[in-house]
Amino acid sequence: MRTRLLSALSGLLLALSAAALGTAPGAQAATGTDSVATSGVTMQVTSPETVADAFQDGPVYVDPRAAAQLSRQDADALAKKIKDADKPLFVAVLPVAPDYPAATVLPAIRTDTGITGLYAIRLGDGFNAGADRAVLSNQAVQNLVTAVKTPPGADAATQLNNFVDQALPQMRGSAPASWGSTGSGGYDSAVNTGALITFGALLAAGGAGAYTVVRRRKRQKAAEERAALDRLRVVVDEDITAFGEELDRLDFHPSEKGADDAMRADYERALDAYDQAKSRMGAAAHPSDVRTVTRALDDGRFSLAVLDARRTGRTLPERRPPCFFDPRHGPSTADRVWTPSGGASREVPVCAADAARLDDGETPLARTVETETGRRPYWEAGPAYGPWAGGYFGGGLLPGLLVGTMLGSMLSSPAYAAEYGGDGFEGAAGGDFSGADFNASDFGGGGDWGGGGGGFDGGGF
Image 1: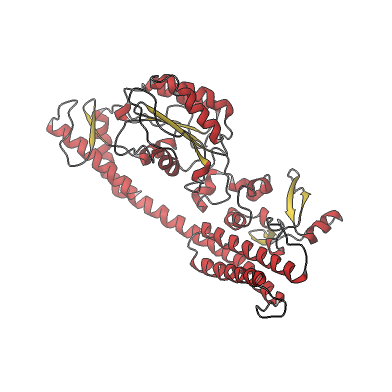
Image 2: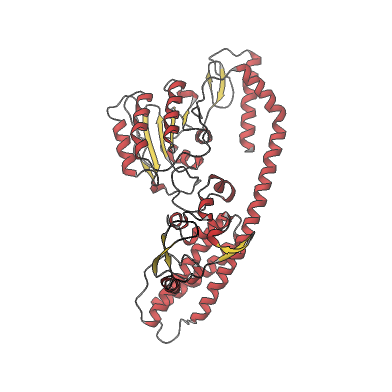
């Protein structure tokens, strides 16, 4: 944030200097940095981060150097179409420039934006698109890109409208809550010099105050993260202790009679998981770091279950999620229908003991945690427990398990990512904040760049 403030101030001072020196309209200021002149105003060269910032406010961004490709009127109409459809579709019109490397510009913008969605980029005369699989399949994106590239040579307005018109009915998810109701959110066209000078003076005068506010907010956020991590630490330490007790109860000795190499390997994996959980928790600096701890514990418990089956001659268990009601119960053995208070019924993975309780009409033994109203089941607790649950129930499983619960509702809100690092669960729905936590193989579809009349090969994702 401090870098962005300084960059903004530098750009404004550059504009002020140009105005004071009488720089001719259309001329580029003689500076040591890249810049571009638009209608007499020298503007700093943009970057994927600039595009990502604009996407927080609206679905369409036009770089000032590519303004001739898509008019303000066309950009606003395209943005309105996307907003009216309430879909997480992002469109950028960019020039062929070093700050937009063809091979990396799509994933870079997706990472910086941090929102699950469909991203379409017109780069010079080339076109490409990529999507998170939760929004649109890779094959669907490939087909759409191929369709709008054929025949080649279409102007930007025609090509982008064709893409948007075909993509919107097929997409899943909703538009991010941060979008307003009007405007493209990112059309960087000519800027009124007088307004720029006035704004520059105000920003220069208030820059120090703005930076103070930013620092105060950062300190506040850091304090909130520490408090959330402290709450999580209590729960995770209990999990680690319980796993250590399971290791002791198993009482396995690598040299015992009947032990073979497979058993020793299972035991070694369980010990490694125990050590990893302790060391990772000791090094945890943010709530999101807890996710790797509970994932290690889940791996360790499965290794113990396999080892126990080998020792007793039973069939080896299949790899399943841990018991939904309390991961300390170990890997689940079956699925059962469960209905949370005030929510819809869904199937959840359960251990044998909880399966029997549900079959008998009894209440399963739920994992409870401390809340402001006393101890409650973890799915009725605050968002700080999202990373804890995410480590146990990753791979896209968690949203379905927690839908309709208090924790599930908090995890799906945009505010969760800003406060707790965006690590609530994997497989976020379209429009949800996932930050840089997305699988590159799940974000793709467009393949090579190209579009006739200057198209080029920038590689796929």
